[in-house]
Image 1 (cartoon, rainbow, N blue to C red):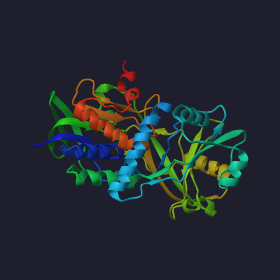
Image 2 (spheres, helix red, strand yellow; image 1 turned 180 degrees about the vertical axis):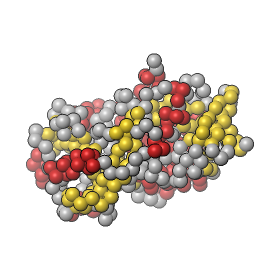
Image 3 (cartoon, one colour; image 1 turned 45 degrees about the vertical axis):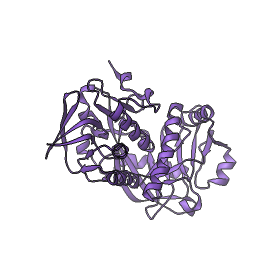
Image 4 (cartoon, rainbow, N blue to C red; image 1 turned 90 degrees about the vertical axis):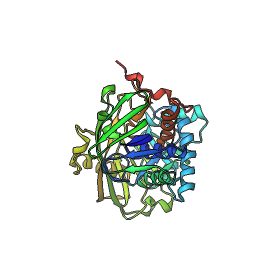
Length: 378
């Protein structure tokens, strides 16, 4: 049986980063994934992911984001790739909503640069976006988007350069901890042994962490690309990432056009429950597309309804929409990250660093205490 210092289960966004940080510390690392590197079967794919600092979900995320920004810069420098496109982010929503008040709260508490825009400002600077009636708008210049598959592959490549090994196309059947110093991982091909285990299984976290009974729900989410009839949506013309909260508390977001696929638009709210992530339906949902097309017709006047691409991914949701990052309460040599709830990718380098800390010392100086698993303990 092959033995390692640390085994990482799952090598998507978080797992790839954890493997790199662990290998960087001189540990022997094995990453295991049931799919190939950079795959499109989970949650870390679909061309782009938003990155922003003034975090409307909760101001406690901002210190983690400061560290994440630094780590993304370091990954770009190490890999020689342009991963973070700082095109800015415009966020629009009701004065009594969730998004704009949350952005302003985070900006105020952490002294972040955020512009409050009038309707005339939006019309002048962002011609491709029509504001809903009685909405407010804010703009964060330090925000933008990450090239999601490139980020995962860069973390994996840097991990390999530091000595990490990987096994792909192997499905993990089980893991066990026969004593306080050993973990055994059984796949459909082999068994492996390690002193420590990191679980970053994404939508499969329920099966890998079943004994913890963390209330995770997997949702199917659709990503759509549409042709644009106006160059104002092109990234080279200064088009930003955008996020809109509508009066009915639905949320839509999108990215500027970077290639011939056009503008990417999706609904952040809603979602269909996925009983088994291995049996995910990847077909277009006509009702989802209809909602997205209605949003485009009303608020993106220069985007056509001509679809160019569609794919699906999964959100793994917690009841409070916040992540779970912790040491296993029954096995001190096991740590995990789960339930990123549709807004976790931008954090992957710092979550990987936190998991590397937990795996090696059992604790971390990173401010993750608000993400502990005990908040769901019965």
